[in-house]
Image (cartoon, rainbow, N blue to C red):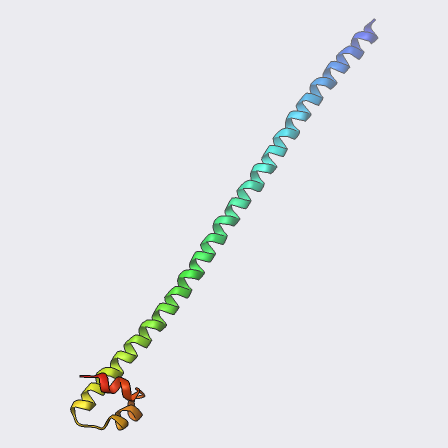
Length: 108
């Protein structure tokens, strides 16, 4: 009889141990899933930040290049207008500054 009680107690203890192990395993699985999700989210945020920074740099570079070109062209037009007022020929102005004859003729 004592042996039967001991066996029953042992089986109950094993059931309890199995339940605790199942609970711990579920917690580890949940933890691993959450950790994986957090890593994915951090990677996404990092990728978006990198793409944004790269886009901003590219846009800034392109904008500066475009602005410099516009400013350079405006300076050429101003110089050509001054030389035209001074009486220099259109051909000489075109050769010296690099503007077309049409652009020089349009100047006031």
